[in-house]
Image (cartoon, rainbow, N blue to C red; front, top):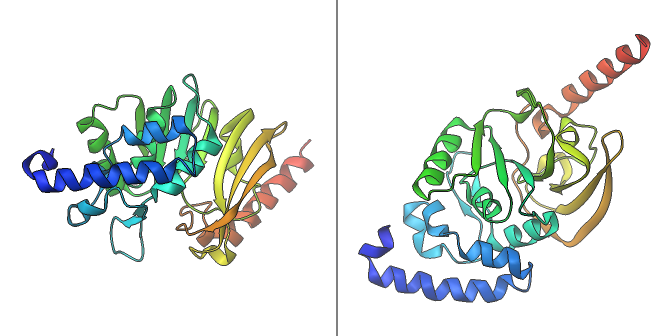
Length: 250
């Protein structure tokens, strides 16, 4: 690990990690925070931002406006993971792998993680990180989750990009009845600001019941792909079209 060759950097990270731990305990459960402390966040950081690994900041992974992505802010990871409440026997899904940091945290808390990443470059790099850290209970699946066949549902699902408020989407169909979905919802037209963090409980017939909404507002990149913000109108035209003809054929 690079910190072994740079003792001053190692000392800085150890000090800032302890400060971050204290902060995270005000935002997440002790169980989640301890799992986060076991994951070397510096391994998920761009090389030129290593000193910021344990600052409570979202760090850009790239500067491409067409595929902008970040490693999530630790405080937000603590809040989202605490809402999700992953248990040792849970089979958990994530939409939006990015660096792989959130998936690595989940791997410490549940039985298995399947993480979907639409960017093949990010999917490949996060898979390499998992292998380097010997994290064996995470599968990184490249591609748009909406275009992939899902033979079984997950106990819980976390989405690390903002989704639009109407949840008549295949996202819900990924989760078992009684399961939990945690996602940032909003803002208007898919801007990265003014999202609300929402915990849903999945009911009968793939219904999503709001169970909790956190008071803070959040900044998240909008969901990409077939069911992302960019395809909002086209997606809903197709959904209503299919629903109409399915009902007519009964």
